[in-house]
Amino acid sequence: MPPPPPPKAVTPEWVFTLLWTVLAVLIVALVTAGMIILFMKTGWEGVWKLTLIGTCGLFAVMSVLVIVGGALDIRKLFRRLREREASGDDDGD
Image: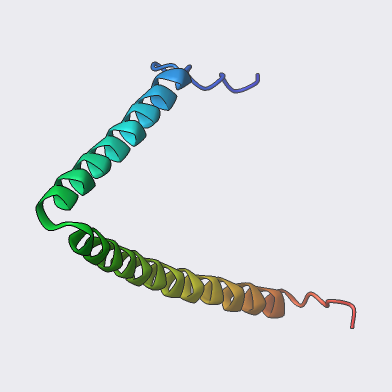
């Protein structure tokens, strides 16, 4: 007897696509409104200062993510090598 099929999703997939789209549009609108308000209060100097600080912050976050992801990949590589060595597989060399 085959296993029963998995239950059908309660929420249709298009709902999540629509929510992500609305969220992206709202974020862009809020950032744009914030930049306009910042420009009106501080001029171009404030806009470029915020841009520099924001991009440096994003670079720092991305650097940490790459370091952590690379370390996890190296651990996975060593685990696979140990498993291959323990099982006695030969790579054909």
